[in-house]
Amino acid sequence: MAVDLAQFKSVGPVLITGDGGFVGGRVRTLLSAAGCEIQSLRQAVGIQSSPASGYILSEQIASAGLQVAAIVHCAGNSSIRASFDDPRMDFKANLCQVMELLEYVRLHSPHTRLVLFSTSAVYGDATAPSSEQDRRQSISPYGQHKAMMEDLVAFYGRVYGVRTSIIRPLSVYGPGQRKQIIWDALSRFASGNFHFLGGGDNVRDFIHVDDVASLVAPAIDAAHAGVPVFNAGTGQGVTIRVAMNLLAELSGYAGRVTFGGACWPGDPRVLVGVNDAARALGWEPRIGLYAGLRATVQWFNEIRSAQ
Image (cartoon, rainbow, N blue to C red; front, side, top):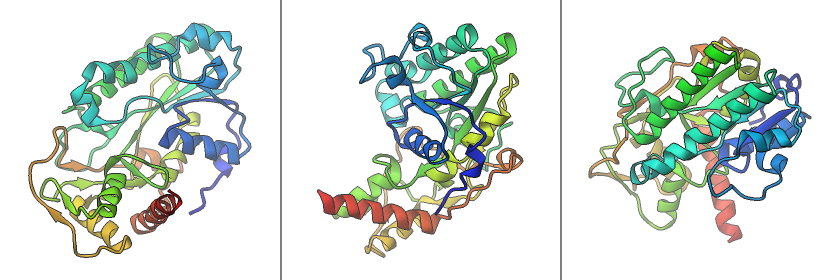
């Protein structure tokens, strides 16, 4: 499942936030493999862990004396359930650092472009595939705060000319992910639990993390003050029932998955992304669901064996 690294070779020095996370770590790996000069935000400002405030000030970033062509912002809370439990935490995690990055670019590095990882949760409880032009109608604090984040960068583009592009990933999965539905399902299977909430009829657009990360380079090139938005998905939906049964089959537990009970709050019926805008950049998802899940199961089994 090799990723074409040629697209990354023209990317200049890049600062990455959240490079210790699932998506950010994969972005860093791809940039490094292509020979790009990269910086981690925390390393650049000389701290080992997140500050007590949860974000790093623009003045701290400026004091590091960085010269970067682009900032890829992958940091923040990614749990819808956690956002319901603590919406203030989610607000701070998903909005405050963006504000500081925008201020850094505005005041200290106006040539720098920004790629912002948002979420398809901004579409809310859709009943059909969503395009970037569709009305945002979030049904969770997480989705609402991400929409506010998008509005903030759009304002900075319109008023200050900060060049940004937004990536809205669909249901990201792959080796290395230790949360969300695929990880939860594999952990359940390993403990002998094959039951899932809901009817299994909700539809998701599962996209491999390598395919999401490979959109970063063209998104950097496409960034401008008008703030283009790109869905990162396959454009194909699959029901949770089908996905979980396939995952069970690949894990050696075929025919044992069951469904029932109420869904979690903030769980949309359909989450599928029309990806024409990203395809217009020359980007294509390369990894099919079967191959991606098979690799994820293999990785999961390897880490269990190593424990």
